[in-house]
Length: 204
Image (tube, rainbow, N blue to C red; front, side, top):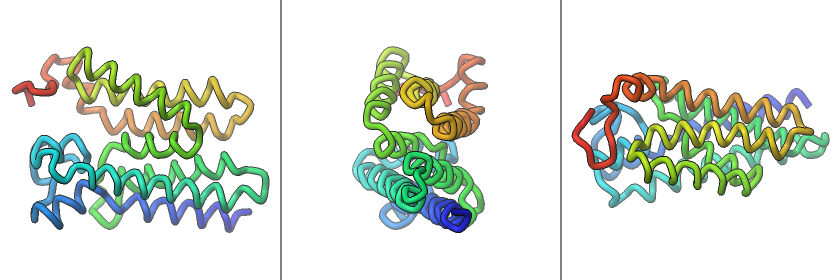
């Protein structure tokens, strides 16, 4: 099983290196999204700098790569009785590849779309939960970052509540959630200081 675990990790990490925002900004906008706005290789920065015209392609790339990584992990470990754990292993690997892509100088995104893709494969109920939480916080506060952070917490709590009998799955879920929250550390600092940018706002 060690070989299968290694294959799942390597496959997931390499898939994570395929960054939707960087790929689309480079190929269709002829610019690197990381050189604009916040410098982050994520959907929010892409939208703020290039609009919604090609944003659906960014979403598709990041979701498809995540789903693929999770399915590969689940397929490899399912024969050993660890199908769900394999899905989450693929999720951890693709999140690391997305956040710290070796092929992009380790400058990646924050993993929110990855989290949605992982939940979609692992448990659709948790996917709905995090989307609802994200939407509610963004609509009520107009902070995308706060919605993302709260969705991360909902991700971990959802897996804890629904898969408590699978400690490895729960541990992986919290690793993914805490990694995404860590990637929002600058946003957290700005939120605490009161100068985080809102949707439609002028703060940076």
